[in-house]
Image 1 (cartoon, one colour):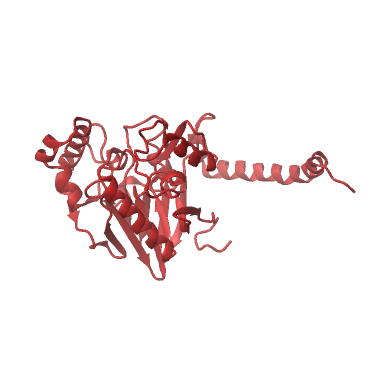
Image 2: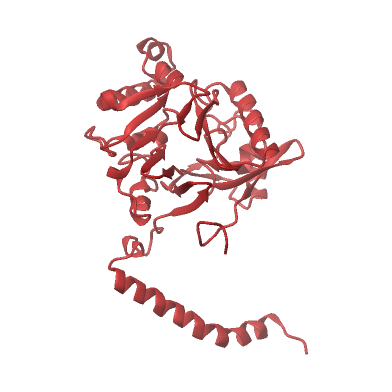
Length: 338
């Protein structure tokens, strides 16, 4: 018997209806029994809070969306590629050719009683579609007061504005704030600020205001040093002078928090020699990108990318002259056994 698409849909609808209805009842009962759910926090026109959790050896990793920003795509975004080539790469990834959606995804790492946050998102500032980290943390049951350490990869606003409120009060009141030594030296220097292009001086002002307000809470670490047991800081300069990524290891499992080694993977993983307008030293950033993507691919390390589509975790595979991002399989339980 020939079964066309309409007949298939109609025949399966009745069987699905009962289970779908039961699923809705279960969800409603769960919400009623536990009080207000995280879904109640979002209106019909906004996205739900986003958090995704998985195990890495003895660590529990939670990736939390801070939202995203949309920017019109112009010829200046990828500084060393033709606009039509950039548009083609976006279309190949089923993305619109005239606009770029840039996600922001901080990460938390729990080890025993220690809870570490890597980068902080925009906090109370930034575009209206960002600043979602607090909602995601609440949905994941994470109290900002429980964060024992905040580790910063570099001093761009989408990574540090969420350290303090607009009034300068710390958002993570019990946390030490750890920053890369070369990044701190660059942005806290008045001489560097005086010699910087006019458009970059605001970043100096922002960094100096935030870290000045935090005072003795701030400590610095060197490249190749352990930030905490199992977490090593790796030189990833180029995007900024002190840009840092982190190799996280527990048992036989490894994760590289890539920070801004690449912006959106549809562009800069597929085309690692392209340079984004945000890269302060484009050639150094290109060399860093190649080195770290090679490492992740050859060692089959899991990666987390700050500007990758949420939940922003998976693997890097070599693909011709470039690479491709392979999203991790979503798992409903933390041990990876469905």
